[in-house]
Length: 372
Image (tube, rainbow, N blue to C red; front, side, top):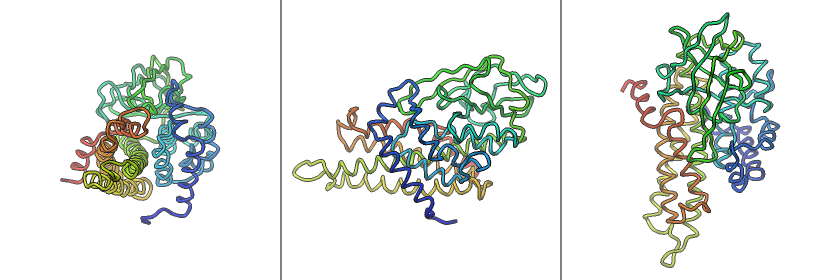
């Protein structure tokens, strides 16, 4: 594999950074995160015009037709700016339909996801808060070729703005995936603010909801394996945003260490400040290496993806928590104030830590998958 970005990927990174600096500076981010759903439809439409929403959707369905490494490049930039938008959620929904949907389902759903007229998300967790097959208790009652669902999904990302949900449920001993639209009778949602107010999560309720036969993703014949793949894709996507945010937190703190004068010299002169900054740099670069190998595995070496994704998410979860905490600490007391942006990155680290598996969960996977 190539360990550097291609020319096209570097252009994507540069264009994304310039767009976000112009259209979603931190002042705009702060405004959007105060809205009920942390969502700006004009910004979303602009992202659709740039092709971001269909980046990994095939061209025949209205997308750009790029790969998961390219998506990771983009998500690094959105993470740097703490972009409040359901980009990860929609990309993961598109990935699920691309991987497991029929041609007719792809035509029906991917085009609207790519052009921004639909917003997708995964609805995986339930009351048990257990990731994977054992956490799926929602049971479908057979009706014709489809199923009736009654129950709830918890901690659904961007639930308040999503119009399309990928919902795993049990059908006998199998795990089945259904596409549920927010407009379907019996579907309800409730969004909650989190510590990181640029992100929203909440509950999806299903009251005798019909998943018709043509809304069942038949390509996910091995539902348990399909669920693992979706969780791995989600872990990689969240890790990409984490690394962008980690790097930006490091930059903010480094600049502050240069500007803050104490005892007649910049505080960055002192070893007690230098050493944490150096450790931040090492953590960011280590996390980035693990991330891009995992993103490469998505399409090039899928059998290695579970271990690669677990390594990347586990390390980044710990590293981002350290960087967020050290960044605020090195700012001193003002780092805790709402005026300074560094506290927003600490809050993002707290949101990202448990998203699709925390460090402990993924280290256990590393030990199991690696045969340790």
